[in-house]
Image 1: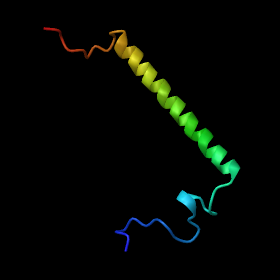
Image 2 (image 1 turned 90 degrees about the vertical axis):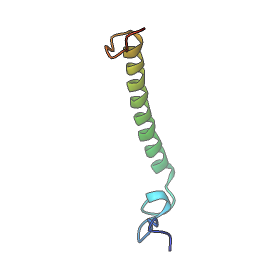
Image 3 (image 1 turned 30 degrees about the vertical axis):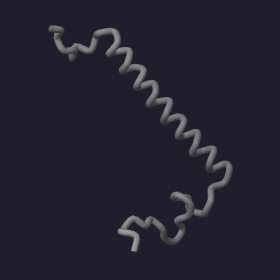
Image 4 (image 1 turned 180 degrees about the vertical axis):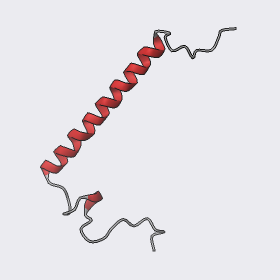
Length: 64
């Protein structure tokens, strides 16, 4: 029917929530967890940019 992509079934509501549309508290928890993941990712990107920017990478190609 759906090419095997249907994820529904008993107890499967809106985008994986067990009981239908999430409550305000569930949204808040998920959004806060998502924000924390994004902040960790951003910190990792900043660290990489700093390491690459100060020339300590060691993997820079020789200039010709």
